Length: 138
Image (cartoon, rainbow, N blue to C red; front, side, top):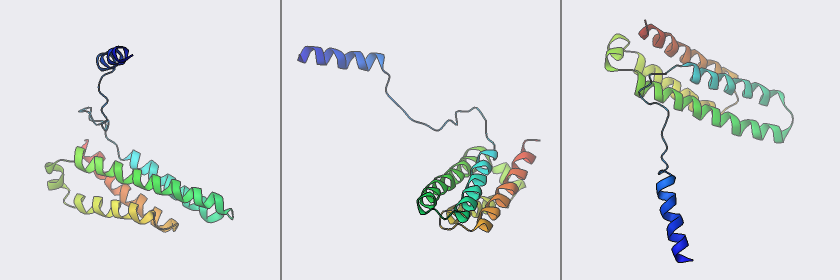
């Protein structure tokens, strides 16, 4: 039995490569603020549905999902900020740092509230990042 176990372990090491996890940002250059915007739109829609509902169970689920989506907004923004934008972009658009800081803070704020105005503010901030992003692609 011990010999069989060792043989299976050896086969597993040869046949099944070591598992690794990574974000998909291979040097493919596929970046787009649309990912953050779509999640922010989801945050807003969830807030609206939450506010219109009287079902406590639904509202609880909505809050959990909204918080997950807000975290995704932050993740997509951080990836853009850290992986796409370069020092030359910051030289040309010195407001970039402030824009990303504000947008990620607003995404965090959206986890704490169901005020649709916060979601609208987040979408505006992402819109400004989006505008600059596409200017850098020209």
